[in-house]
Amino acid sequence: MLDSPLTSAPCRSACDWQAVRPPVPLWACVGCGSQWQPGEAWAPRQLDGSWPPGVREARDTAQRG
Image (cartoon, rainbow, N blue to C red; front, side, top):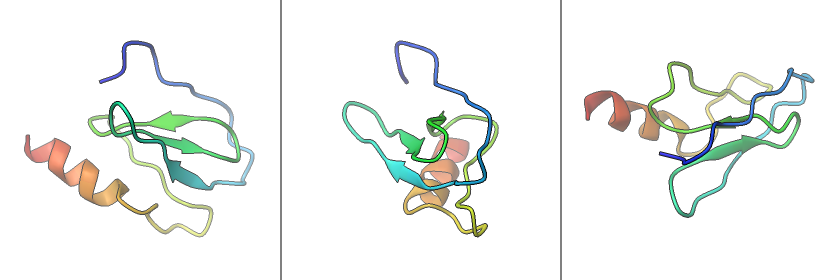
């Protein structure tokens, strides 16, 4: 988990989630700057509705653990 709160910003309908790794699994949206990490109650999707690489697996692992 991060030591500081995740960034949350209004959607700009330009969703492009990219992995930002060390030191913990973290994804950030290039479009708005919001962040997501496994264990959050929601999971990000790309603008086309697809899962960003690694997000679905990370979400499922966090839900099991």
